[in-house]
Image 1 (cartoon, rainbow, N blue to C red):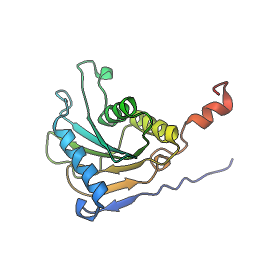
Image 2: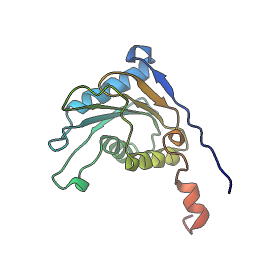
Image 3: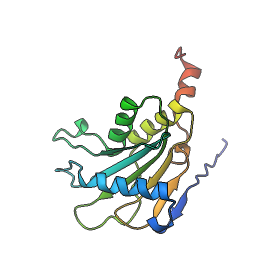
Image 4: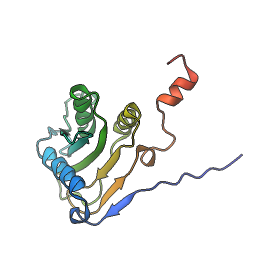
Length: 167
């Protein structure tokens, strides 16, 4: 047996005032998007905003459904919208924020596993790192410089091509 260790790296900021202008703007857009989320069941409103390489910002928010699997997370709403409308534009950064129903969320809100996999695909598609900015309503902000920090041992295009007739 051989034991391996995975080391993750991320940046932590105390407030939006410490962020650069681009990251601050993106996070504030995510916060605005969260306000318009359709979350009548969970009451957990999530907003996402992403910046494309050309500077354009695309937003998304969670869209729930009485049949839970039919709903979609904010991150994937934003990702899929960007990729459908601007397929040749790499996604440079994605910000996530959330609003809770019972008090303020004071810790960074990470993406779920399905969203992480979709974000890995976006990163792989354009062959450049995807910066992820996470915050609750208030409190600290965490920034990951690439998806491997949020989902080590990733399953991506190169792995699939290696073991199938994918190419």
